[in-house]
Length: 413
Image (tube, rainbow, N blue to C red):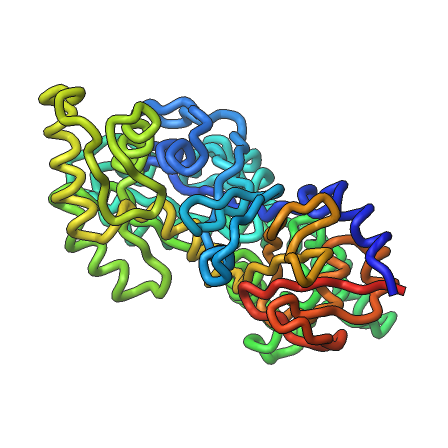
């Protein structure tokens, strides 16, 4: 039994190349770049005209989970993440892509470029203008004159039709191959869609909801199947942005009545609070429901009024700006991920260099201890012998189901 191979690999941080990707989607001029900027502090260009974002912006954001350091009353020394007052901030990658307009799957606007940039996203955050002050093309209109529910439907339709275009061009050929060679058609479809980040398991699950045989499907059946597949393979969270505006309240209520995953948000408010915190004007951490002014004398009247507005119309009304809540919900609920902490020394809860609780790894809920070994590195998984629960210092088997917050030491052959 040894940890040697495990910790040679762990020091290379092999899982950093597997950072989860979140696609930030939506039509132009709804606040996607403001959401992206406030979540990543990367400074993507913001302007109130369509197609401000021409090339996909990528940057690191963080999801937040409670760090075991508080519970265990120890001082942690994170290496692949950060810990702020007992909150472990775990990196994920955000992709802010060009605005989508109706007909994108036919090449309108930045059409296929937009859709191609989404292919590796594990989950989609759909930013909509809850105030109804931008039309279907993203052009400014009178507040409340556009129904944001239409924007949810059109985006789902555009992505579904994009997938349909991929399958339809070879559909007859695929069916002939399926019938003549008696192949598993789910695997045939997977071959066509695997480059878009869709798994065979996703396809099999979606097929259960369309019980008729593939070779009998008409175009409507294919589109229905793909719509179901999209919800499984690329789950979508709706962020009802501009929630502070007067015309947003009723629309948010309607959205929440129709859709399960809707979060009211004000990306501009989050951006203002983060920048004020960076300038040491206030104390504020992402996801907080309030802020503390450090020195009122340093604030101009305009800044005081802006902070007062954010406090009354956003924080007190919704309990936060919605930005951090959206990131957390996308990862921990829609993707059903948990956080696990691998360590070398199960007694000191540290790595070979003495870093306490050095790394936080996102892994699918229901994963076993052997799965964790493979997430770290294939060699670790193949040499896996057993694991140790560092809290209890008890040995656990390969089929031990991990829990969020587990601190695990892996032993290899």
